[in-house]
Length: 146
Image (cartoon, rainbow, N blue to C red; front, side):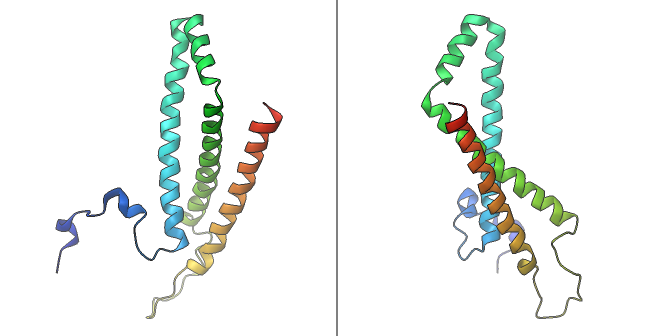
């Protein structure tokens, strides 16, 4: 028998995706982490490109000309996807922490009931609202403001 404190994390980041029989909530957890890391990367790049302004107008204009490429438009759409999902799922997590959507408290008698049946509709609502925000952002990015 191995002790969890001494065995360490054998799967690492791969464990986010190779967990075996996962439920929908675990995939949402992994996507939430990835979108958070993606938004952190975007913030870092955005701060770097915005700081080019201190080097004067020619450097700023060259930087903006470089970023005016269809590949970066696709990157902007990925940011829209990441932001939409991460924001809506973050609100779901706040509601769960505050006790909404967890279900009524019951006495813990074996076999234990889970709150998955109560939380799953919230997860589905997250996906639907995220899809709507992604569609609106895509329409704005590719059709309204080209």
